[in-house]
Each structure stands twice: as structure tokens, then as C-alpha cells.
Amino acid sequence: MYLQPERTKEFTGKIYYHSNSQAWCLIRLNKEITNELKHLKEKRGDFSYEMIMPIFLQNLEKEIEKIKKENKVIPILLWIKKKEEFKKSC
Image (cartoon, rainbow, N blue to C red):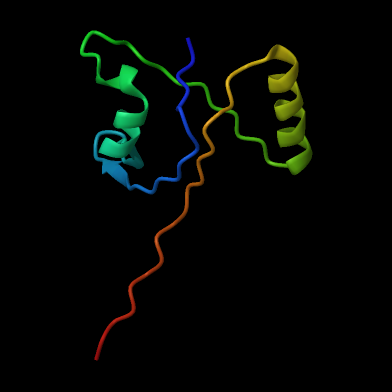
């Protein structure tokens, strides 16, 4: 079963470094997201994810068409960005 929010919302958050993996790979969902996707609060829940990383807009458009044909839940869009370096104050 795919989880689906009840309304469109925008969220921001952080990615955390995992020393065992030696990579920035931990995404913590903030409280607003868990409030929107209430199933994530179930202690006995077991959740996974599916990710598609198209490199061209055409590939993304094909995936969207497939979602429409199969009548799937609208996916969550996630942009990963590098934090801008802080300017040093004098």
C-alpha cells in the first residue's frame, strides 16, 4: 500500500551523515510529514520506499504517463541540494 497525503504541502529538511556508511544518507522525516502520513506513526509498521532517478526530463515524463495509466498514487517529489557555504563575517 502506498501512503498518500491528504493535501499538497511543501517541506524542507536535512540529510544527515552516517559514519558507518561514510555517506550523507539519512533523511529524517520531520513532524509535519509524520502528521500528514499518519501510518508512519505505527510502531509495528514496516515501511520501504521505491525511488526512480531519471536523468532526463523525457524519462520523468514517461514515468508520469505510466503512473497515470496504472492509476498509482502521486509520488513525493524530492530535491537533494548541497547546502550553500556560509559566508564568513569579518
